[in-house]
Length: 358
Image (cartoon, rainbow, N blue to C red; front, side):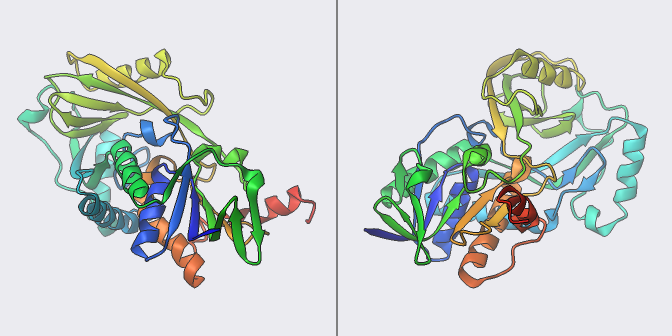
């Protein structure tokens, strides 16, 4: 029987980041994934920033997650020898005088001002952008090319003999003598990183879920500024006059099909920024593993203590995954605490009710 420290089920953003973090800790692992492209990772724009712009609030633990993410992805670039990640300033186009005033107020608060640059009043690069209320500059933003990150990492894991291209069969999982047995593999622990598919996992399907479909389009335009811009949607420059425009949020149509309604929604938001000539090059769709309380799902099963989940990262996954993956590994190896807001122990009563133990 082959032995590893960890079996990882799923190799999207979460599983990939977890595997790299395990390797940083000196652990061994086997990743099991059937290489389907119908995942949120292959449609993710990969953009992160520290704010929730709707009410101009700092994202949960942004001051911790962002430095960790920047350091982590830079180290993976060096390890793989591939360009995967880039830092950017983000330009928030204000939609009202109230937003402009709120922005100015938040600039006086140190936790916020760390991520806020000077307001932009006049800039020729924005001459085609409608901006009657001005533009605010955000620092600490960036983009991970998630598809390239997953694919290049997969090649790396394959070359190490740490990747198995296969569908996973839950019926073959056994926890015995404080170890996990899966077919001809023996592991100390198994970690499920399956994205929205965790609802089909018989060990963790008791956890509440609120998946969200997202769509992006890629356009070509010579009239857009070569900057990361946000107002209702984001516009990210890929180079060569190509841009990502995203993203939609749809809790009803949970499929991986590109839709006319999604495309039209994005084009309407794009038009609110100005009258640009463009050509649509591509469109992508995915389903995010989001949760009702907007917090991740991390931790061990209530009964099977060698089974873990690393999920629910949602639209902030690029920003959160590096720090939280290390936190999970430290919990497994050293019994360190998982953040209570992310720990699935908060749903222990749901499991007990389901199994008639409460």
